[in-house]
Image (tube, rainbow, N blue to C red):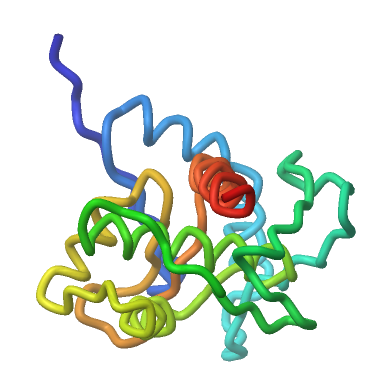
Length: 186
């Protein structure tokens, strides 16, 4: 059975939002982000000509047990993440058979923690630095490792640019919670 590759590239003046993968995956992601895309296009049309830099609003933190806008429970993983205000620190080594898997797990855990305090877009460089601090950074292959995790992590920004951000996809939130639950219980 052959699966076609599909790609969506949305620029909004080089803010970029790119999804690629199987047709099914791209269709699912478009559906997941449909409202956000339409709102961004609407805002872009309404503010055409404005030179103000537009950033997406920060997500509001949710209380323990309360459901997020995506329908996920806000959970706490105190044996893995130390969260104080909007500062998130990973306090446990991330598992993985190799540095690539450890790097992806580190990114998932950190992005989940940041998302839980209301911060959606995290600097690509911050993720890279965190992987170095965790002792799992393979600097020669880091970009390729993160690109391979596109089912879980969306990287926004131009290729080669130092201004890139990372966000979790909905499957990424689920995977991060599975990982954190396992580590929190261990």
